[in-house]
Image (cartoon, rainbow, N blue to C red; front, side, top):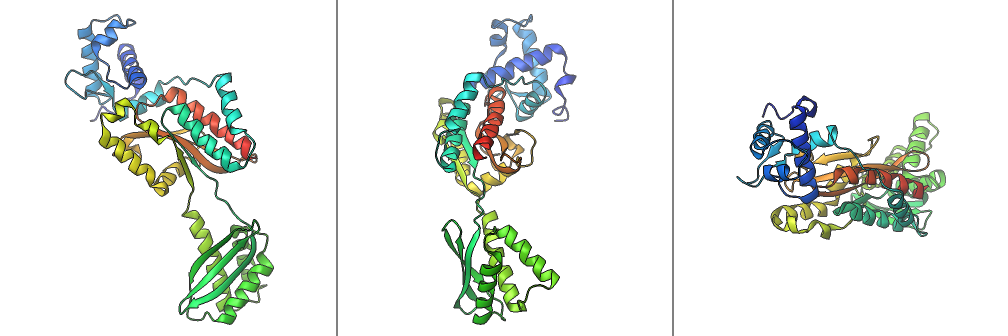
Length: 349
């Protein structure tokens, strides 16, 4: 398909206009658009036969496809990408829409409630499923102890300053004795209390490197293992809120129930969804993944619109977005997702 990468700008004005009308018609109605429809709607001073000729050309270069012999044309993923990047005119949220979003996200209550509201808002905006990746909670250490379980294993108990308690099983080195575990526990509690895990690890490493730490080798190893097991685990446990999966089961979707089943199965894999959303973490603005552009949703042929959200200091703390069929109303949803991200950032503080 050597012509599939041809940019919109390289099409003549007639082909550009027909391509635009086909894409917009498909995104509005979810159905292929035929030459008779284009001719009947006016705005194109061409006969249905001439329109069909242009449609054939657009299909030949990979921008349009015909699902059935006489069903009209619909954009391919390549066509959608070129439309989104080169032709789409975004519709900025109205004052009423902005006020409604801010009102729902600004309700008093814990931040968890705002995150739940955000996922629901995104679902309402898009008519599809809304997703919010929750900021990683970094508890500050109040107390940590390492106690022996059996040969080769110990239990690391972390108490956060918020009262949370978590346990992790820790693999032991051959030199780890009960006295080394006690020394490591005392060191962590005395020197690292009040710090996050990341901060504690940096302080500990700096003290060891400078020779200020009086820990012996076995105790130092236990401190490193004890802190690392939480840091690693936190990185592997993104929390994802998904709302509006039922909206994916519209009339058009039910005609392709296998695709919908594949999409819902994919949404159950929260880890993989979070990894996909993380690709938008460093983006300056909203990112769009169309169909097979992302591995996770390639089989279901779905699109993802995602944007990072930041705290008041400008630090990225999470990602939010919507997922649905490739016929999402990108022109409306993209600026809405961007505005929702900014509104959530204000709420987080």
